[in-house]
Length: 201
Image (cartoon, rainbow, N blue to C red):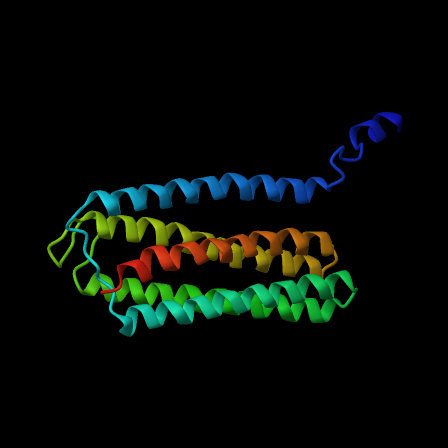
């Protein structure tokens, strides 16, 4: 028994291993996005023929809608965490479902935008407007990586909600999931102005 106790010593940082793990993941993932956005900024400045493909309607307007959807989902996941910590399981599950629906809506709006751009001839290494093809490459890589995080987040929230409903997970799991979701939202706050607003014609 003493051996088992020794294996489960409290964290010297005063933080649960679950929360510490998600923070370590967020820091590493933030470095990935930072490197990608830095490379994007460098390529944009280094290319004098950089194309500005986005008109206010519908691209920028759609981006604003996606931003509102994602910011709202941060509020709903926060509400889920608070409800879970207060012991209101039914309310927490409802807020988690709302967060999932908003994440799905964001992904659907993003996919619709991609389909529209592909229909206009945009490809990762093709620029239908005649400028550098890196415009398409950076757009699809940055937004694609972020969209992947949103989709993974929706799946994870679904798994956590299912397990929480069955009693397998506790409010600490909701908090860790909420931290990830807030990170995804925060990244979008950099992606939207850099990729969309700075490329508005």
